[in-house]
Length: 341
Image (cartoon, rainbow, N blue to C red; front, side, top):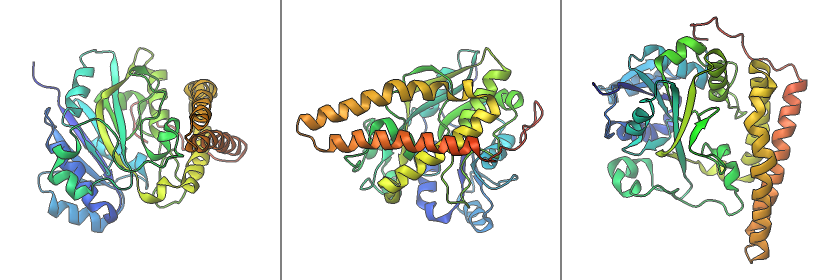
């Protein structure tokens, strides 16, 4: 049997991440399971498009053919890909050498329509992108986060900086996380692509998300036997800019997530859109808050900060959801079955 053909899509939007983009591409080139192709989807930035075309002659560099934002970039990449599977890697992340091999193994089960992996953080103080892609093995020797995590920052909220949060368990899941994910090609024919009215748009300040959540739920609704799989061995490292390691961004991101969840609930229904979130809020977060208090009683004062951050983060997320539900926020119309929006 021939190896599974995996097209890797990296969505990019700014020259400020130039070294990170090169590091991401280098990590894909170094995969044990070689990619079928590497596609860099540039989000409405002609100068960056031209520069990448010159710098990466062996890579398929294309321009986003839809509206600004991550969803449009992902849809454009998927439309161009001709592999059996389309994998997504963030433009400020690097992948472990077994990343694609582990994704490929997940698709041995024909019911599996999507496979995602674990995202560890490159906190402030971690190696530069150039150091990473010039000597990747030095960083990727062990599957641990790198750099200086703020002591108040709870692991249960690592999703606010694009990481895998405490509480995720390997196995079948409702949805995979967008920056470290893959889908069979036919998933896009069934679900119709990512909604461009949901998710991050970099020309706006608000850090929205959840485009992959809505996509996975919609895929499951249209193909009830479809399985989404989370493999915590399929590791990538995602850079956390210094400004995102502050409490102000934490609050802003939580509020934006609530707004995004309101859009998801309108698209796929509140029952499906909030099932995982209810469990996380009612079980994982209270345990995390108690753990923080216990740490404080044992002599770690930052435990109080983590307990407080969990409480504030939950409150801001709920507030954002309430505002989004009550306001006129709307996602764009779903595409007809088999089309990409």
